[in-house]
Length: 220
Image (cartoon, rainbow, N blue to C red; front, side):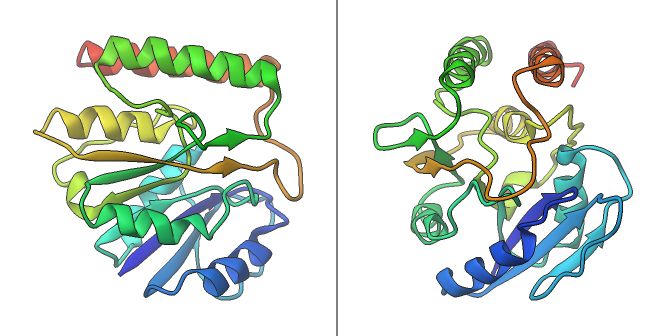
């Protein structure tokens, strides 16, 4: 079974997204919404988990503890990830350990601002080289995993980029088969972004570098 974990905080689009997932994903699945909103949302068609910790990465970790599936998918709750790609990712996970919905492989695209795309591509190149990871979209928030990937992993999320930590730590356990499939990353369907190219965005960049160094030198 597929467990879909969606971290949310004041996301007005979440029920529309849940309905869209159920409509477009034919495989057996469950949806877990791990929420940190000021007022918990009224959820239909999914299991609501009230987040006890802070941060998006920690929300996914909390969701993992409650998930029943042997395949795990993490995705955003704002409509930026198109549910129809999940079917293609399921095909890929049959022969791989991790399948990444990637904006930066041929055929991928993002509607994000060009300044952010430029910064993101540089970060991926520098961090990938530093950590020895041959992945173009290291910090994708749209990633599918075999449950076995998490066996023995101790995750200490910093900021939003949990996929980077999982990729690096799981690669150290032994050979890992990773596939990137092209996806179109859309602008959020409703609400406002939690991170922009401003003070909050720059803080996230520094957190990414802090995470990278802690992973490389064994303190993360």
